[in-house]
Length: 604
Image (cartoon, rainbow, N blue to C red; front, side):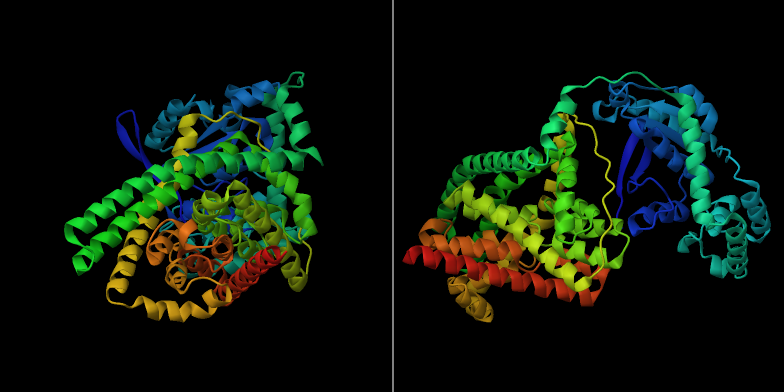
């Protein structure tokens, strides 16, 4: 799993900062939660910063106690202090620091308040290198730990012996510790201690230790937190509307429609002049060096690749990602998850699967990776399969650049709503084959916040940069490759390979190459469409039915190459092949349905 890494300058010193996956415990049952412990046991981390939630302090302190057990210098940054104050929550930071034995600092990250102090303090505790003192557990646990400590080798481990012993008692020791190689007898001794503790305590040591931490965290929170009366605010009244069983879904529909209108209007305003600009450049290039030579074909393909990214993809991708970041930071996307949970259970989906779905609107790759938050393999496969059907930003660029631009925003919204319906029905059918019921959703709904422009722009740029750095070069190479193939007269071969599909869908034979290259990056299926048809005026080159059929097929057919790679890594070849076949079959079925419906309307 990848982690977000960066370098920051703190009081003149450059330090490396690693953002680990968000979790409330190191003893999680799903792969995503276990990633943090695996990283901390395999890397020489000089200091830890735990960003706790002031509005749910007791729950956050459980993780603080686990981090203290790792024996690394620790700073607890209590975030959302402004929201806690609004709720009437007061936290005595000094008393909490005394109870934990580590520095505790207030933080309002959204406004940048307290960030410098947190980093400065973290650097100071890293320089001192003093590990925090671990609160003791109940005597039975300490006795078992004491018998394990002499068997744990000190050399070659980045964790102290007590931390390794506790994880052995919880049966959560990471593979990176290589205990089977370094101490072959340790595993059997730990298993014997776990069995003895289980018999003595009446429950598995893992759950007993978790209960001990929960009890201690709640005791600490009760001592340092005071409450004053909370008054109803506009945020509470807004939730009454947006989470209403009826008005909530109507509000969701209105918000999505407004979102699509804004993205369409912005992209439309930018696309027309940019296309005109690149059209003039292409004409000048053709008159200067011609297009019949290989050099002319290469330059023409390069220019068309640049034009495709700058004039067709980015005008829609950038405002879409800005809007998505805005909705995410306001806290509305979590409320969408809450609204959709009951509906998702009706169609056989796990409540937590809304998280991969939400990520899927940005990119399918992190959406598939985030299925690690689900405990059961059955749920991970189902969520991964359905999240690949969610239209990512690249596919939405095709929806906006083709359907919305030429047929209007209502056509784009119709495809979007069709996608939601298909995801639901597919989930219902797949869950019927897979069996078993999914558990309910336990979701922390964040408070409403007005995002800062800097945060929204930075988040959008982080995602746009992925397109610029990873996708755009592929667009350029694909465009150049198509130009060379056209120059060498190879395109008929590629088109004939896909001709059974394009013939079935009533599409021009030339659309075969864009569909083939679209498996590399979904943007290619739009950029190279203009190249293959010999122009970007799709209203003149394609009928309305063909534009809708092509768009629907691109939205649903085989995920891009990067997503297929991640699917193979997460699920294996067999399940990846099943998902690829499923998406291709659905794309064909739905595109044929669109074509047939258009024919019936024409006859009527």
